[in-house]
Image (cartoon, rainbow, N blue to C red; front, side, top):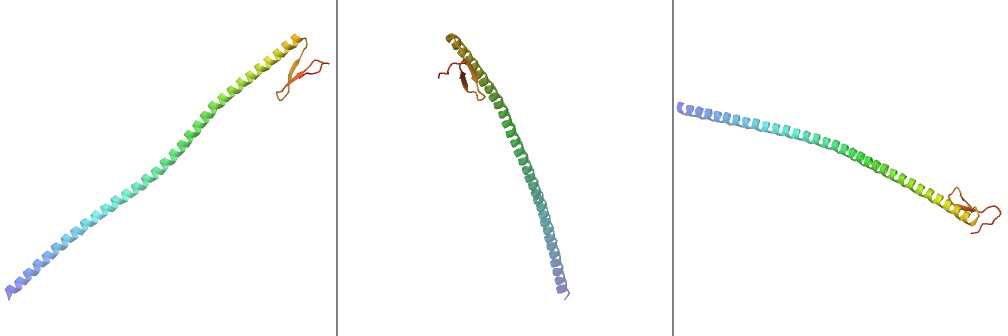
Length: 143
């Protein structure tokens, strides 16, 4: 019958329209999900690239920091070395002056003792800095 045929056609058309609508919704959902995935991949990729760039910058800054620290330590060692070298040289000069003063004092003391006793003793120093006493000619040395 025509009514049954029309009902079947109407039902088939409604089902086809529903299927087309469902398929369009699924395609839209699939497209939306692909776009989300692409956005996620691009964000993650950018983050990954950014992370690698940050790591490279960190390695470079650590190398610079290590170099600067080594330079600063070297500079401080050189400064201390220079200061203490100056101090040590000043102390050496001071000791040399004191030694010269003692030598002059000892020579003067020996000359004054020699004049008091009527004998002229000479004080000589060897190359090693040891004190050697010499008596006037003809007299034995008494120790």
